[in-house]
Image 1 (cartoon, rainbow, N blue to C red):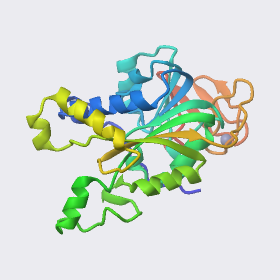
Image 2: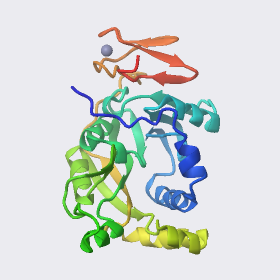
Image 3: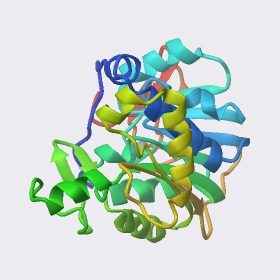
Image 4: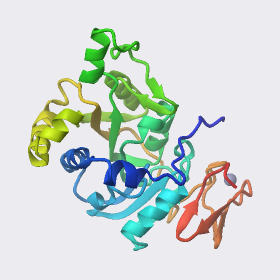
Length: 296
Ligand SMILES: [Zn+2]
């Protein structure tokens, strides 16, 4: 099957530019509040999709093991610098459309500021469901096209696309905003139950951010988040989903599967992991498993 185009942060200074120097303390703190409200405080093995440089990873400290997945190897190297190579972390460069894990492996998963870059979001969500245990919890964040600013701009004729229609809007290349009803429909079709929604970053406007103290902004946002099940008009929405129905049983210590053909178990022969079925091989370098199918 053809893979949709991928937004690759290879070599990007995103973490430094956007988060550390970009005046995003408010957004970061508002996300922390939402995550604390939605994610069970402890668990066995959590999949962090689009982990980037590991900004959120310390928030998953109650999990026995965290598997960080990103398409960009250089982002994972930054995460390693930040978090260390401790036994609790596994670093995997992989394509979200071909996750290299056996089915039913994870009891927790998060995907934050990542769906935003998915040309085929529905397919990505179905892939997440495949690797989750029954009753596992998946926290999804997505960018909401029906946000208050887009609604107002549309109503006064300063924006051509409608915030009310179900299709995603690609406002720049490989950057998508989604309609909340569409995301809920995709989640349900993928085998997730939608348990709770929080609206986040209500006050993401330069004028407000410059003139109100950070603590007050975060407090106001944490209150406004609670109406997330009633309406969604914020630029960011967090959803807690539960994996419904049956999941594949995990056999023995099986962990990785071949992203090219789906076979498991793979032969672990450092510095390569190889597939006995289709003979693809995947390098393991500097503590990073590289399962990107088209990159080597
Ligand atoms: Zn294979």
